Image (cartoon, rainbow, N blue to C red; front, side):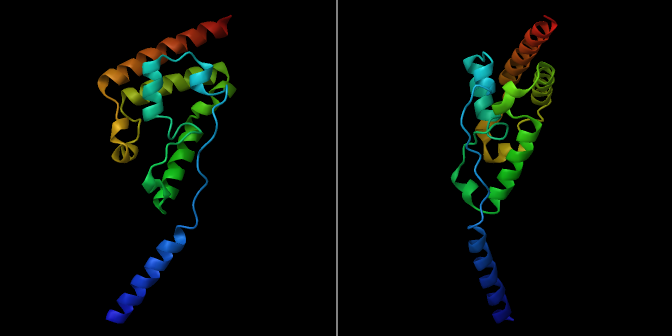
Length: 156
């Protein structure tokens, strides 16, 4: 019985080590004129909130921590990033038409207000990304204001 446990343990360790050689591609794009923070005039306080709480999963610029390089965590993180970018990619903001931008601003406001974003699983590993009520109110006010500006622009 001890021999079977020992063999299973050795196989698991070898499997874990072998898994480390298969890592997903890193999300390390460059900043372009399409990026939200470049395409829009974003106040510094809002920019800081977005970079700290949103950009890791919703842009082409993820800040990787040491444990992001360990499989299977690396694959879980990659999955979160791909899902986040599918929903909203700040790095490609300028490619969206004005109505999609307005819709995304409404979603940002609603999801932060209802504390659906950032995800709880993200906050477990990044507690500094948690938004306080003042930050939530600031995001809501700013996204609503920008949405109104874009709506007026589209009417012209």
